[in-house]
Every structure is written in structure tokens, then in C-alpha cells.
Image (tube, rainbow, N blue to C red):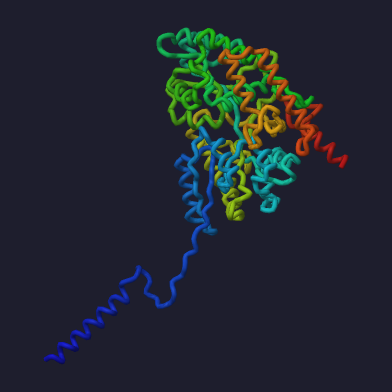
Length: 489
């Protein structure tokens, strides 16, 4: 009996050992060979100025993370749009920047000259370059960018003027005939505000709280349609007096009470929301603003047109400036540069750009995406932001200005001279500076910086001068001059 109990105990112990050996391991690991090691993914940090909160964009990035064969994982850095440029600048200058990021056009030259960006030329095949329009490749291939290709503009941003047709009707204005001159705009704004007294309706809004963006678009970009711009491509000099009539119009709007109050603090998102609520009659917007406006589900009937001209004789005196959307670049210090470039290519791919286009987040200039049938069927008015024969990219203007400003000791990238100019416009609108004198002083400061820059090594003034410049065909003179220089060489 004792022998039988001993045998049974031995069998139970053996069974228990076998059970542990077989079952006490992760499912699927029944083979006796060594387990395959899963290689860790290469994480690529990405910072983007726009559209990262869009659900479709998030899904596309997640699909890439799950399906790309290179074991790459994109990590989106959460940087607030309001402080994106300043935060990015601090990260880059401290060596802690993202691997792939979008950069303001005005900072490109500074970032290239400070060796912050990777040269993409070794990674680009001719077929990849052929996807981009000639102007985009020419822009990237300028000698200003040290003979390499550090970015390639894939999308553009256009400027338009929107107006509330319901408020036009209430003010006795024809909703199918929006203002086409500054004088008509001032009159329409006054009538809308007068009709809306007591119900918080205002004729025009200027989002000065986002100073650089709003004034670059509403003042400087819109002025090109009247053939005026603060930089003369023919002479290579600055002249801000060309903006006197626009600034005077805004001062008059403010004096007559038809400007939305708090203009110097008004944020763009707030202005768009107020327009969507039906409280603003007119404002300047870009194609980038379109999605935010749609998110607010505009209540009134509204229209989209070209911006008013300075006067009737100046309508389409120049092409309406459009801007390359903040280009994507690769950090020169990215520890996994090859993988970072692959992410850069994914974000520039036809598939991803088509997704942005269908969401109304971008106007791509590659692959004929804008010609895609039924591309943005659910987005009313988006086609009115498409580039037309009136819109054009302009040649570069000097972009490395602040380091030549004798009044500053900063050697880091700032806003390439733009921030002080935009602040000046706001001071004028606030009544803190006299219009004529302020524009004269800033013109002198900018030209002084040009003269100082001209004594340096990197800046070549002749690269920014086109004696035959035609404002209605802004790239024509650049192409002709490049052709002549090519023949001389």
C-alpha cells in the first residue's frame, strides 16, 4: 500500500512539472527553439504647425506606424499653435529639436545658414523632384540655401476676403456685389455697424492679437493685388509708405466705430468664431483659416472674393501673393537621419497630401491633386480658395535681416525683421505712432539693415533685384534673369 502511494505521488509530481513546463509561458511559445527578438522601433519626433489634431490625420499617422516596413514610429510633439515658432526656435537652438518639423518661410535662410537643417539632396531621386512645380524646385535650389535642397514646398496658402451676406442685406447692401475698393469697404463697414447697433454687429474685423499672421495677410499680401509691396524687386529697396492708404482706412474704420473692438488683442480663432456667429461683416482669411471656420459651422450665408483694391485703377495691378505653406524640413542633428527622411517623404507623399486636401487642410501643388474629382465635395466654398490666374508665388525677399539690425544683440533666429514691422503697424492702428513718420522711420531702418548686410559674406543684394519685374507676372523676371545668368556662366 505504501509503495502504491509513493508511485502515485511521484506521478503527480511529474505531471505537475510537465504542466508548468508546457503551460506556464506566453501563448504560442510551445517550440523548444529560442524566441525571435522583436527589434525596437525607431522613434521619429515630428512637430507640425497645423492639422495634427485632425482625426483623419491622426489615423493616417497611426496606420503608418503600424504598417511601415522600416519599424519607424512617428511621435507628434504637442506644441501650441500660438507659440509654435518661439517654442520651435528654443528647441532647435538648444539641440533638443524635433527630427522632422514645419518651419516658417521667414526662418528658412537663417536655419540653413546656421546648419540646423539636413541637406535632402542625397536622398532625392529625379522622379521625386519632378512631382513639384518648377517654382518650388527653383525656390529650394537658390544659392541663398547654400546650394543644397533643404525643403520642397508641397502646398500653398491663398488669401481671400469673406463677407456676411445676411449682414449686407440688413444694411441695405447688395449681397452679390461686395466692396472692390477701400472706399467701398469703408462705406459697407459703416453701414453694417450702424444697422447692427445694439446687437453687437460690426462691419470689419482685424485680428491684431495674431499680429504677424493677420497683418502679413490682410495688409501685405492683399496689397499685392493693388500692385504694391513694401519691398521693391526692381530697386532692391524698402518703402513702407505704400501702405499709408490701407492703414488710414483702418484708422477711419476705428474712428467711425465699424472696426470690431479690441483689434490689437483679438485672436484669429476668436474672429473666425465671431464671423461664424454672424457678428462680423467682413474680414481677410487664408485657405489655412478655412477649416477652422468650417468647424464653427457658420450660421449666416457668406461669400468669398478677392480682396478689395486700393482704388478702381489698381484692381489686379499685381498678382495676388500666395505663400508656400510652412515647408517640412529634417533636423541636421536627427540621430536617425535616414528614418527621418523617410518620414519626411511620407508626409510629402501623394497619399498623405491628398488626405490633407480632402479635409480642406492644404492646397497641394504636386501630383495634380487639386484636379482630383470630387476631392472636397463636402466643403462649401473651399474651391474658391484654389489658386487662380490672379494668384502667384513671388520671388524671395531678403530673409536674414535681424542679424544685421544694429539695435539688437541677438544672434539667434527671430522673425527676420518682420516682427518689428508688424508691431509698428499695430502701434499705428492703436494711435501710438504717427502714420507718416512711423512708416518713414521703419523704411530707413530696413534699408540700413540691407546696407549692412551687403557688406557681409552670405548676403548678395543682386540675388534680390529684378530690374524688369512685372507685378502681374512676378516670377517671369526671376526666370529670365536666371536664364541670362546661366548663359553668362
